[in-house]
Image (tube, rainbow, N blue to C red; front, side):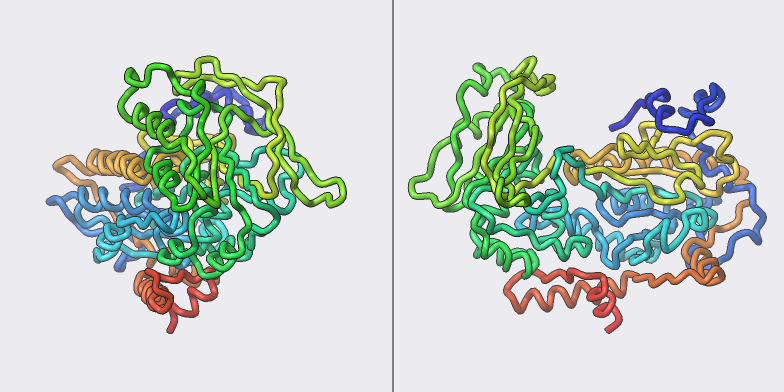
Length: 527
C-alpha cells in the first residue's frame, strides 16, 4: 500500500508553471472531508430516492457514489452501509454487468463465491447499480460530484504494463490481461482471436498468479474447461491450439516469485502435463529455517520437479531471465521465432526482497507465441483534476493519505469549492497487487476512513443544518437537462442478463455463457 509519497517525484510530472514552493507544501494536504455538507442551501440539491435519511438519532447518513463494481467497490459499500445505517450507495459501472475482476479476471476454473456476498449487498433498498455509464465520457465527473457527499474511486487497473521491446505490438504477442479477458467474455477483447497454432511452444513473461492462469489454460484438457463458464468462442480456439510446452519466465528466483502455492499445485496436478525440474542450486540449502508459507512452496517446487511418463504437454519455471529482444523470421518479418533473455544475478538469492541485475550473458528461448504478464496499471478518469483528485501517472494510482482519503491538488485548483469528499479503494489505491482477500482488507480500511470522517463531521449533540444529496436522481436530472445520451442499466436489467447467460450455459452443460458484447447484453436486458 502507498503510505508515503514523494512530492519531488510528483512535481517532475507537472507543468513547470506549477513548480512553486507553495504548491509543494500543499501536495501532502488531504482535501476537505465532507466540507460541503453544511455550505449549500436546501434548494441546491433535489430530493428523491437517492437522498439520504436520518440514522443514529439525529446524525444524517451519507449519499455515496462508488465508481467501479468489482470487489473493492462492493466491500467498501458493505462496510459503510453496515456502520452508517441508512447510507445510500449509487454504484457506477462502465459495463452493463457488475463484479469487475471477479467476472472478467478470475480463471474460469476458479469460481468465486464472493459473488453471492455481492448479490446480498445489492439486495439492499439503499443500493443502486448504474451500469453502462462511462464516467468522464458519457457523464462528466464534476456533474457527479455535486450530488454526493462522497465519491469512492474503486475502478481497478484496466491497462497492462508493456515489457518495452521493439516489435512488441506485432502478431502472436499478447498481454495476459487481454487473453484472460478474452476467454472470460470481456467485451473489450471479444475480437482478440489469438492464434495458438503458430507452433508448439509459448512463453509467458512474468511469474505471478495470472501468468500461471495463462499457462494452466493453455495446457488444460478441453473437457475440463468445458465445465467452466469460459466462452464458447474461446473453447473453440483452444481446441485448435498446437501449444505443447509453456515457459513461465521470471527475472528473479524461486524465493522471489510472486505466484502462490495454490496456483502452482494446480498446474502440477494437471492430467497429461509434466513439469521440468528446477535446478537444485536455485533453492535455499536450509528450507526448514524458512517461514512456513515460503517453506511449503519451496518444498512443493522441489517435489514437483519430476516428469510424468508419457505426458504430451509440459511446462517449466524459467528463473533469472530478463527479456532483452525478440527474434523474428528472416523470411517472414511478422513471424516470431524466439525471445532473447539477459541472464540475471541476485544480490541475495535466499532473500525474498533481493535486488536483481542483468549480466552480459544471454539465452534464446525459441517460441512462436508470447504472453506478457508483468502487471496492470490504472488510468485516470477524465475530469479527476477538475474535482481535485491527484492521479499519479507514473505509479498508476490515486494519491491518498494511506487510508484511502484522496489528497488534494492544492489551492490553485480551487479544491475548497468542491462538493464531495474523495476516497479510493482497491488497485487504483494501492496498485495491482494481492488477491481478493487483500482487496477486501484494503476496501474496509477506506470504508473505515469514510465512517470516521462522517461521524466526526456529524458527531456533536447539535447537528448543523444540511440538505439531502439527490444522488442518482440529481445526476439524471442534470444529464437530461444537458441532453447527455445516457443508457443506464440498473440491477433488475442485470438480473435479466444473468438469467439469460445461465440459461444459454445450461444448454451447453456449463454454469453460464457470458455475452461477449455490450450490444448483446443490452438487447437481452430489455427483453
